[in-house]
Length: 119
Ligand code: FES
Image 1 (cartoon, protein in one colour):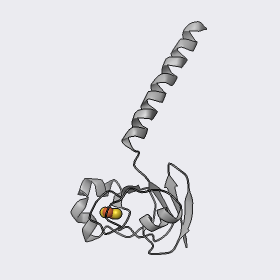
Image 2 (cartoon, protein in one colour; image 1 turned 180 degrees about the horizontal axis):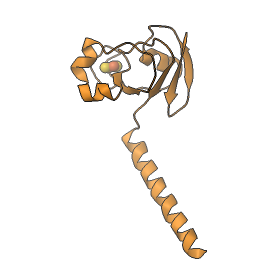
Image 3 (tube, helix red, strand yellow; image 1 turned 30 degrees about the vertical axis):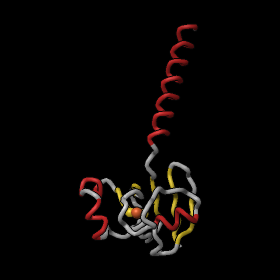
């Protein structure tokens, strides 16, 4: 068994050797967008494998759909990547969540700026 942690939720699950990241995410109730049922044809399940994580090397399907630059940055298909040891998986942020976070950061900076001028 190997511990798999999903970021940014921080949820983790114990996974069997050889279990796919997509299946482990499902068990951890971490949603990963996909449309092909894990067949490696929609490319919607891209995730990033962090640092010292132990996973299977990229398969031919991943090499076909993911650029070598992305593979070098740890981008993988969750449905094709098999867990081989302790693994940390970063999920891409949705565009809506990114916009909301940027607006919140802007509001926070504006508020802090107003507080400094009042001091
Ligand atoms: S689930 Fe479609 S490519 Fe992975």
